[in-house]
Image 1: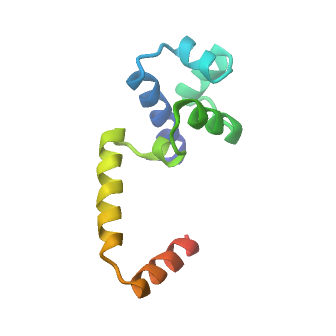
Image 2: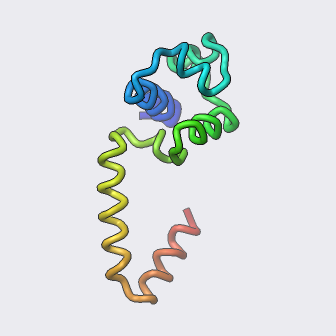
Length: 103
């Protein structure tokens, strides 16, 4: 699946999870309804500003729009990662941090 499809699906999923119409969602993010429909129908990719506005309004991180799974699964992933990191010694944490910096 492409980045564009992931973003589009993530935005659509967010809208439906919040039980909003396209019109209501567009209003919440201060966007025209037609502009929002163009995003949802893959006619164009939302700008960084639009993504930031969506994240601000719905109190999410941008990465959550890229994940094909619902928020509940994201919480489980965060918990799993947190548990694993808590069991790492300082040397391993430094190596993990360095790998993340390279991404």
